[in-house]
Image 1 (cartoon, rainbow, N blue to C red):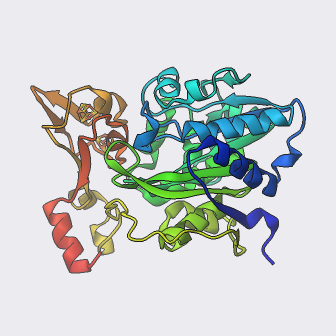
Image 2 (image 1 turned 90 degrees about the vertical axis):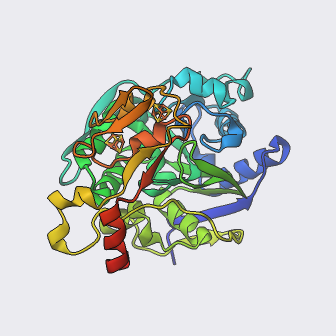
Length: 372
Ligand code: SF4
Ligand code: SF4
């Protein structure tokens, strides 16, 4: 029998608060939310990637956040909304996402993750700096959004917790893990282990497909809320719903290798049939024969490129790039592909959807030959 921790609840839902609230409450009750103690400090961590309205499907929907806040308040506990957005100010994201308006009048605290504390982590990281507020919370409720991710395939429960790494430490970590997505997935699982969310409820009502997780992605209605006390199990269940093998999602694979995903998951509810969900074109970073790995790799790996028509020269990408590989030259962007570590952070943060990952010519040929 799977343990109750690997149980995933799936319920149909829509953004109509009269029906969404009881569905959310039912999921929380089923995964142990009733045990939230009076007066406890409950950090609620939505996906607040960037300032964007709910219909873009970039951030967790404000009504899902509202349901989480009211659930916590009903237990006599103190809700705190926290995150460290990849771009834009915390306040701007709260405003443009509609969260400020949705929560008007509710006694809730907003606290951007700012201070970090060191925690021990496995090889090769040894220590990680993680938001102190996430570590010190009595309870952490993780509210991921179901989205594609150009670097990691999908961003779900485990990946959402990368927001517990404060501000500019995020691109620093991309830089340290370099082009190695498997290493980055291990880092994400280490963050998950450190913050140990008590509950994860995923907003899959209006999801995102295509070149997510930012404005290059395309909203796609799926109509579900999914919850679990085990975010890895939740992610495995989402993979099943989308017709992806869990081991294809590197965070699930890393979690299994790190001993966090041994038992089978049990599903309570019925997942909708999701036909032809469009995944991003994530080029493998370590394809081809071994002798090609290393120095030559940079010629074969997909690289970021800009659409000059769509680019507004706003500067977000070059401010965020951890390798300082982007420069403006006149009305265009120039990439230094020798410096670029292929983290695709620039694609993630571009507010105009002007960047994508494109194959190099040698990469295309190699993929054809090796059928990768
Ligand atoms: S590519 Fe995007 S983020 Fe970079 S300058 Fe252009 S619009 Fe801004
Ligand atoms: S150019 Fe883009 S993909 Fe390359 S290092 Fe900078 S942010 Fe990462």
